[in-house]
Structures are given as structure tokens and as C-alpha cells.
Length: 274
Figure 1 (tube, helix red, strand yellow):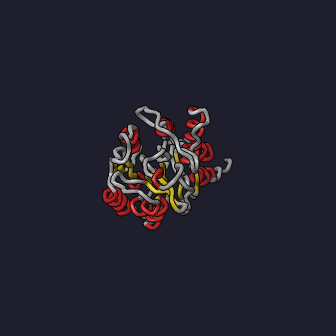
Figure 2 (cartoon, rainbow, N blue to C red):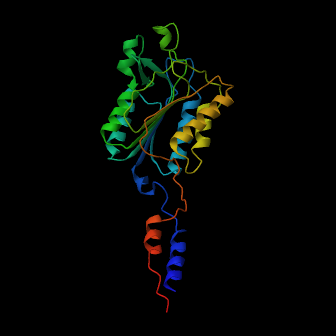
Figure 3 (cartoon, one colour):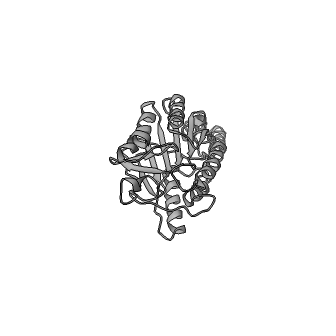
């Protein structure tokens, strides 16, 4: 009788679902989303960055992230936004940044460009731009466990033609452990806006981050495949990963056996035969 009771109890606990993956971490999941469209030096405002930033911010909020969004930020405003993000990070936090606008590489680093940048020489890029590597380093120094950077800034811009004969796109990132970086286009390449309300990159991004329990690396790989196919291989996003732990944009609930409990219960001795 005792053996049958132990077996029944083991079967019951084996179907008790664990808490959603990452549920305890939802209070420490932070995102900074920036869309810069109105550059005075450009012939016309960019159509996509504001739309993309707003929709992505809404989606990340639904997924349980604490989101700060900025639109058409000057250099001072961008630096303040990043300082706010740094101040919220605790050891083990998850931190995500998204930037859409103009980006320029200089001295083998990628810089996010504020709307009020005054760029006439390459030195001006380093003076007025915000270095992606510096941002990731600051986030890491605060103890963030997972750091994700999504950069949709591989656009032809009005600045580089002043000091270069071509647009050089973005540069590879030297990032700390626990970091996942994705650019909307390949290294050192640029793409043209299609005139649609959302960039192809963000269209695929929104589609894939809505898939529950998909690990971040797999999510970004699916985005890369989707963008490459939709563009006829003309746009190939770049990914670099130093992730040391799993992360899912939508942690889900999965019924998994509680092995330790099963092992203890099933080890109860059988009653002696009478």
C-alpha cells in the first residue's frame, strides 16, 4: 500500500509546472529604446525610427520589461537617457538597448548619432556621437547579467560624405561577456530606407520576439534569416554573441518534472508483505 501511495504521489508532483522561466527577474529587466528621425542636416526626416521605437517599446512593455523611450534626442538628452538606464541596473539585471537613426563608424567603433550632431570631420563623430562599446561597457560595469543591443542605424547619412568618399556602415563590437549585439545590416554596409512605416529589420524583430520561450540567440538568428529572405539577400543583419546564460523575450510556463522531489518520494520503502 505504501509503495502504491508513493508512486501516486510521484506521478502527481511530476506534472506540477515550474514557475515561468525568468519570472523572478521581471522586475530587473530594463530597456532603453531610442528613435531619432529629425536630423537637420538630412534632406527630410527619417520615416521609420519613431514608428519603430514606439511599437517596439510597447511590445517590450507587454513582455514585462521596464522601458524608457526617447524620440529625436540631442546629445545631452541621449547621455541623460543612458545615465538613467545605468542608475537602474542592479547586479544580474537584464538590460536591452535599441537605437534607430543614423550611425557612423570611426576608429573601429560604432557611434549612435544624436539629432543635433555637428559632424564635418571624422573627429566630430567621436566628439558628438555615442559609442556603442562605451555604453555596453558602462552597463556591464553596473553588474548587468544579460546585455542586448539592437541597432538599426546602417543608413546612408548626410555626414560621411563631408569627410569620406563612401558610407562605411558600422564596425564590429568588442563587448563584455554576457552581451548579444545585432545590427540591421552587415558590417561596413549601408541600406536605404524603403519609405515604409517600419524598417524590414524591425518588422522581423517584432514578429520573432512575440514567440514565447524562444531563446534570444535563436530569436535573433530567425530575424536574420527573415530579413535576408525578405530582402532577396540584399540586407544581411550582423549578429555577435557573448551570452553566458539563457534569455527569452517572453518567458513562458512549461510543465517540467520536479526531479528532486520525485527522487525523494519514489525512494520510500515498500511495506513488508504480511
